[in-house]
Length: 122
Image (cartoon, rainbow, N blue to C red; front, side, top):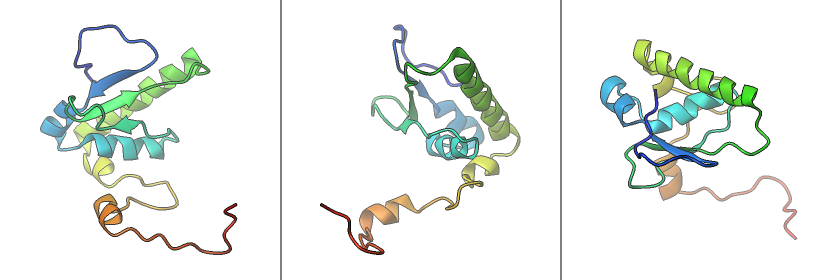
């Protein structure tokens, strides 16, 4: 579902590529990461390393059980089926978070660094 673009073994982390999802379904790694939020999964590191097209870095902690890893794989497979059947689910994700998808490019170019309430800085 998410191919690993290298032949070496994996230790505590691995990098997969979502490039074929982009080509085949029009969804990017960012869309996968946002959809994972709807399943209660913390979004993984994406677009790193830069040498892997549509990179997604999966790095479970040592405390993850086999069951939780199997659940993660099941969620990825479900999202893959969603990408095949209804790409808009991914393109418009997240759906269940208090705040929807942000315009990340605008936020980076025009940051709003205002703070609400008193500062507890120090």
